[in-house]
Length: 305
Image 1: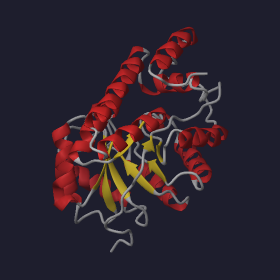
Image 2 (image 1 turned 30 degrees about the horizontal axis):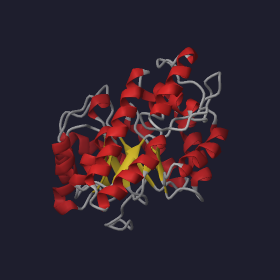
Image 3 (image 1 turned 90 degrees about the horizontal axis):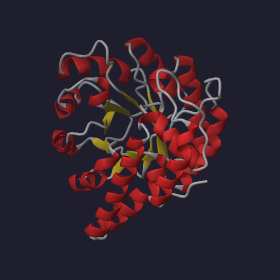
């Protein structure tokens, strides 16, 4: 039986940080200390590292271990949660990363499906995730559902139901897939026992209505989400809606400059935090476009430098 409390929950406002690189594209873990302070100053209470925005799939196993160790080290006195994403293209590397996450004292770990050879159905997905989860049985495990990146369009609530008796340390999901009915289903399956985290910036207010209170967002949105959630809790839906409209405006700016890890790094550079380049096959936002980006961000109320 798992020693992890059955009602374990990730609380607060969680960021999905980028991974800092040097100009030669080597990882730059020394940047994490400043990054943590930036996040804390933006009302971020925890991090979900090495996911999509963290370019985890573009790093080697050894690099991912080094980055994870640095986040746990720098974040231990400043962040309430460091969740390590361990998804890879194969089972054995994910198992290795899961073991490492437990060894370094991560709060929890998560895994997305492989995207080349994909599980054919929910039962096969349980078989796969069970092997990864049991490699780190002492810390909570979360399934990372991001179907538009993984190409895996299965019923996430069915996965949770099938996994309930198979994965003792399964405590929830990070739902970045955009289907709101599926998000709702995950909050009620198995009598609502699972912790559901939402990873879609455009659906933060809708998620609050559904009952999902903990987001995984871009770090520069922490203050906005806090205002949104506070207004929602006070019954001021119009004020909460205005904050969601602002987030949507920022998303439009992000898409204008390319989005993804490159767009986020360009945003952060304009906000005073330089994380260096992205790795191929991604391409950086051209430096010539940064003045216009700064102007657009300023019009959204973000303090550029």
